[in-house]
Amino acid sequence: MEHEELLVLLRRVATGNQHAFNELYGLTSGQLFAVALKMLKNRDSAEEAVQEAYVSIWYKADYYKEGQGTVLTWMVSIVRYRVLDMLRSKKVRKEDTLTDENILELGSEDIEESQYDIKIETCMNELEQQQRQAIHLAYFNGLSHSEVMAHLNLPLGTIKSWIRRGLTSLQRCLGL
Image (cartoon, rainbow, N blue to C red; front, side, top):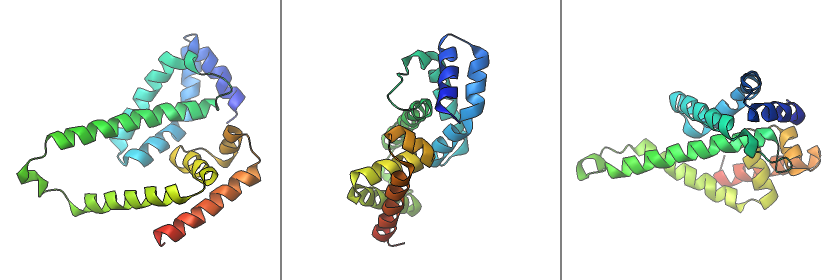
């Protein structure tokens, strides 16, 4: 998927062109859904996040600024912000409903998952900044190596090396 192709479509979407929006959706929805699903781990919530993100993309298409990353990166960031809002909202609602009785009902699985998330975050923070950024773009934002290369404006070999070394360090840190 070429940045130029998406840029042309996004510019047409900014003028209210529904056909261009449908085309943009067809080209990008799979990647955006993958990002949302990976973050939310729930198909229904991921579909909701992607739907809300596309509504935002429809209304804010003219906000995209060329030169500040690719169109796909911009769209992924909209999905990620929507997912983060959903997660924060869910966490707040969960905290609001905690009582002495239902605190005991919290599953150990949630606690183990939370501890694992903290361990991953700790290990990610131990990586070099370039490795961390490349891994975030590739695995948390769902970008391909080529898209990471375009986003960071660096050679593909450099990107692949950063990701490979970063993943090796993560494996070591996580004890895998």
